[in-house]
Image 1 (tube, helix red, strand yellow):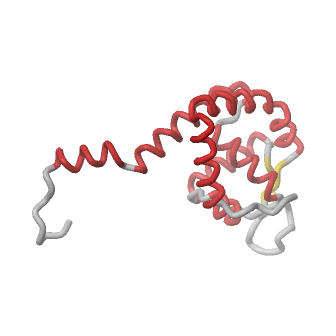
Image 2 (cartoon, helix red, strand yellow; image 1 turned 90 degrees about the horizontal axis):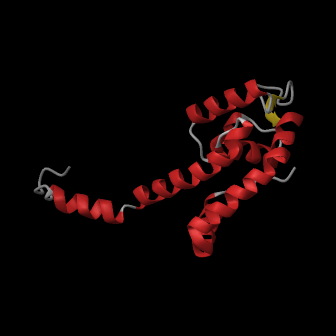
Image 3 (cartoon, one colour; image 1 turned 120 degrees about the horizontal axis):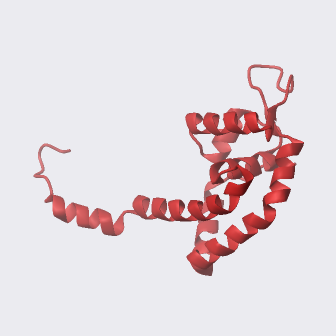
Length: 156
């Protein structure tokens, strides 16, 4: 807060924030869309963040935690928590000796790939529901924004 300027009336700034805040709007959309996918994925014992991470890891191939985190724009603690669960479920594994150094690359196991194949119909149902909610213009806008943020992951 700048000491030279008088504070704005709280009700004015709150009204502006509540009506125009990009972060609040994007988090609302994220929570609602995540809920749609979580509902469809729940029977398979996986949640939306773990599902997204699994897909990214298949696309990237064996990669270090740091590489996955950078690509997926995920903080270290959230990434570590999800990877720990995914390791314990047998969906991913550390690739021994692949890096030859401190980094321990992670890779998706056969069980992880099989899980993606089995849950595909439920994922498609979530896709349909999300597309209805967002309409085609919304889907295109989100896709364009995300593609601008993400660097293409190397194909496996």
